[in-house]
Amino acid sequence: MKRSATAIFVALAFTMTACGQTDLAAQLPAPTLTSQAAPSTYTFNFTDPDAFHSACNGELLIGTTTFIGSGQEMTDGAGGLHVVYKYTMTGTYTGQTTGMTYTQSNIGHGVVRVPSSGFVSEKLLVNGKVTADDGSTILIRWRIAFLRDANGNLRVSRINLDDDSHPPIATCQQG
Image 1 (tube, rainbow, N blue to C red):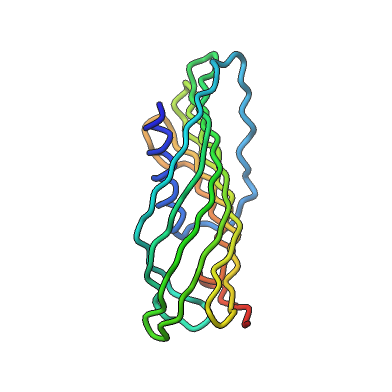
Image 2: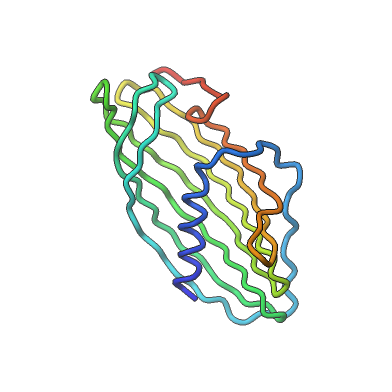
């Protein structure tokens, strides 16, 4: 089980960068657990290469992002899987034009539910910032929700990437 939850989290982490609908009016309902087994706790810590553009000056930033966190898996009385996780996301990047160093600090938490019906729902909330040597800051507020049917088909996709690195929002706090 530990491996499956981490795989779900990694898949969701890579999905975060996709652009989609920005309306989160249809929130996912809270799970109702009739009778659950004892939760299984796990931790994760991995680093991946990353690249994105700064909204402050448009330059390409290249570096690494590290995810450190923990989660719990629970099985309900009907055989459904529920995963709750929280993490910190830190990174260091170099501007390819200016040579400036950028540092990232985010916190996030999410819920993945796989009930016995086969529908999969995922919800992720992230808050943080990326700060450059000159003090300019990109604020990050992500709200992401997905619902997939038993065949894996995406039925609902609500993505609100409220940050300076995703158009049309292109403001920057100058230091």
